[in-house]
Structure formats: C-alpha cells, structure tokens
Image 1 (tube, rainbow, N blue to C red):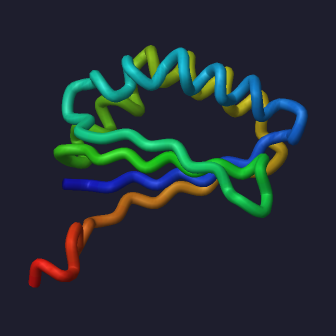
Image 2 (image 1 turned 180 degrees about the horizontal axis):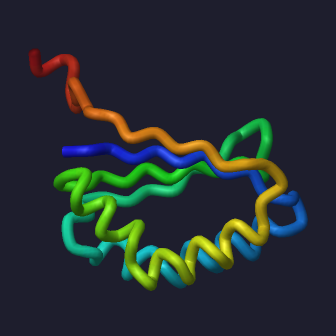
Length: 103
C-alpha cells in the first residue's frame, strides 16, 4: 500500500471554495480504482492550509488516477485557489497502532 500526503495552502478567502471542490469530488476520488482511503485535514493554527491523505493499492493505481481526465479537471480548479506551491509525498506505512493496550 502507498500513502499519498498532499499539503496545500490557499488564499484565505478561497478556503470555502476548496472545501466545496473537495466535497463535490471526494466520493468519485474515493471510488477510483485502487483508492482505499481518503481524508482531509485542516491545520489548527493556519486554517488555510489543508492536507489530504489517500491510501492506494499501488503506485500504478495512484498514477492512473493522476493521469485521468477527472484528476485534470479537479486539480485545475483546485490549483487556481493556491497561494503557495503544493507539496506531496508518497510514503509506505510501516506501522499502524490502533490500540496500544492490546499489545
């Protein structure tokens, strides 16, 4: 499994526009072949910075999504709202601890 983390910073007055884009596209993104999980986070101290976390079965699945027409449409609308260059990481999850008392 591949975990994709994307940090995005928006013009403060455009955060509601981004949330609308995300809400309108989240089900389709999550339903894309190979996408197993999708989350959106907002920074507590800087409320115009957001992070997406998505879990993909493989890099090929992520790349198929990133090369899709749908991604092109969503990304074009999203990046028009940025106030800074986005950052992205593809990482492997090494551990997941759900209940530390269970060990």
